[in-house]
Length: 392
Image 1: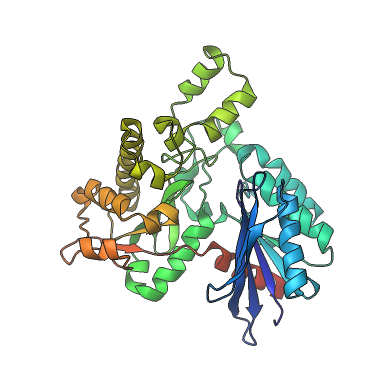
Image 2 (image 1 turned 45 degrees about the vertical axis):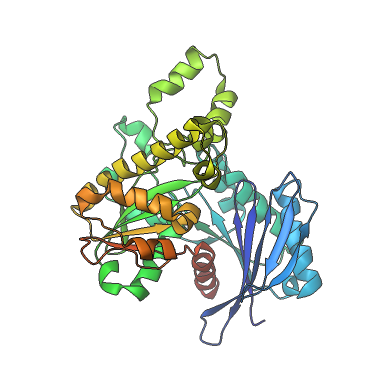
């Protein structure tokens, strides 16, 4: 494989990875890809070739993210020898803070700055850092590049990033950052190829999955996002409540006698779909359940999307297109139909057959808003950024 690049995308309990070949014209061709999932409990490695054919699948010893990186490294070493010739490794890093706004090569100073941002994304940042450190130990000669989920949103107007807090706190970086930026960037690129006129218009992209957010995009640039200072804000998510009156946190501290660690665990892991339903954080499980609490969780998920969609349309001054992506957005026709019904006042109309059949464009002919379903390709975006950084 010519000048291969490895992309590492670390989540809270899984690591996705992709290998890309650099072609003579410096474009990239996707190769093998896979993931280690259920890290810490019955971890499994699955690897596919570029066409989706199975290359490996089975249990691995991976109680930590570092061990999961080791399992990926061993597979690459044993089957294709890629680690000996890697041109570089690109990482998804959730939080870049106020200063790290472009993809950049990781050095000791950058790593220290990433660690300092851990309190802003405690569910994600440590795993990205663990991946960087693991690669540095296994292949210290290979350059690494960090690509930030927050970077896409730095184009937002200053007012969109500002909280109504004293200026001293704002100056310390307490502001709205927005997340899922690599996903949004990939959707903008895909739509520019499929529907270039629409890509230049006013879009709301709905990244709906275990983590969920909306982004208002005008002419390919972020204008507003439902996520703010941390990935806790905005929509209902798998285990996160989304937008919450700060007084609730005070109540938890004062009346429920929770300490900081307990509040953090509660807000990140025990709320959202799981907290409301008492059953599961998985939308598929909830949609299949007859339990009233499951229906309530789904209803709240859809309601909050509908309400925030109006907010995003207001930030744009209108709406030309709505794009669904993410695990739920790409695969749940039921949720797409319900969100569209909430947005009828905006002129959104779905073609039921197209929606249920998995078509890319699912809006009805009489819809005032073009509605699409596009697959997010965060790893492809990371690979392209990594190639550009390494090429200087």
